[in-house]
Amino acid sequence: MLDVRARAALSGPLDRAAAMLDRPAVTPHRLTALGMLTGLASAGSAAAGWWSAAAVLWLLSRLADGLDGPLARRRGTAGSGAGGFLDISADFLVYGAFVVGVAVGVGGPALPFLLVLLAYYVNGTVFLAFSSIAERTGRRGDGRRSGGRSLNFLGGLAEGGETIAVHTLWCLLPGFAHTIAWVWAAVVAVTAAHRVVTGYRQLR
Image (cartoon, rainbow, N blue to C red):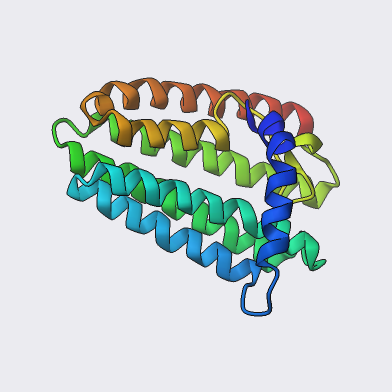
């Protein structure tokens, strides 16, 4: 929901940061890998109950994830199959690991976090299935959200910006993590349902 406006607001700063990082030793794939490693470290920190470290590592992970695209565009490699595949694989791994880390770190009933993972699973399946079929049939999703990236996008209530915010909120308010998880699972589920309906209509 927030991604289009956030991308417009952050495109300038991210492009300038990518220009500063544009050195032979720094590649888009290495930034993606860095984002994945710091994301997994943030999940481990959450599992240990180190909430401040988890929050910092999580935000650094998302920063690295936000810089690989601008750097790829500077080098003319944006939209490559390998880069897009690596990026989405890293994102799904980090998102899932972080939910598990928070569930372990806060303890108590795991059900709300399991529901978040289920909602992520369904949402991700719909998202990737639409992208694959749309590419094969020459259809397009929401071009404003695709932003020149490798995958076709369907908009929704819960997107990348909301996910970053909610995962950060878990670190800032671990005492309310279960309540946040219940609400977030419902929001992601609504997004998945919306994408099923929208994707089906666009592909008919």
